[in-house]
Image (tube, rainbow, N blue to C red):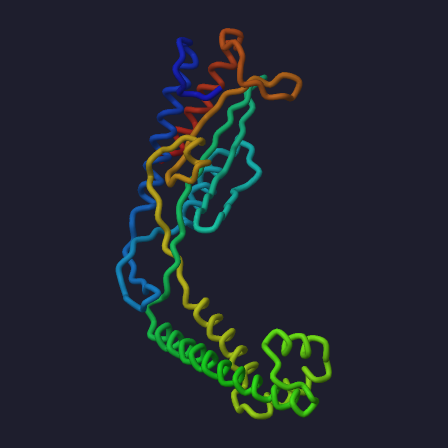
Length: 279
């Protein structure tokens, strides 16, 4: 049962108020930790521009602090997920009180934007890559023309004259030896090392990857789990109270059947959370 939902029950209303307070305190911390930090970044066209970011690691540290201060809550660990540019860091906690269990879900969803570091090396690498690609295209065309000429000459000596492109292809396709000889001869007649250039191209792309940086964007707005699933930026802080029956959680139960002692213990548990977040 989601605390904070509309209810006529006095006890659940009391818990809802505490859940709202917990959400407000958590949101306050998220707002503090995601305050935009201005940085310089470089775009793909080497333009240097301003961008805001924040430190996602600070959210994990916040969760660890919360876990340390609320040791009576069980947790399986802090989880981070990445789906392309969409990132999420969340933690789910549980605290059993008698035959009831409190479920606390904390999450922050944000986007990661890729940029280059503002480094002159980016422009230098891009220029070298462009030169390699342009030269390769030109050399490939020269090589193709040379290959066609050599193939026709070779086939004419074999008695094949005035073959159209389809026939040329069929002859080469069916004659492995001829095809290999033509390849070897054309390679001897060009000083352009395609393999070396291809290897250099891979090295340059790797160097560019090493110059990439991520900037992170989010908001401290509280969102529900449905909006979280649809990929919205924001933070989640929900508290549920379920009834444990035969080790199974049941979200629907009669709150009037909760004993006064259990009610007080549940209230104290939430008050302890509020106290820990208020420090």
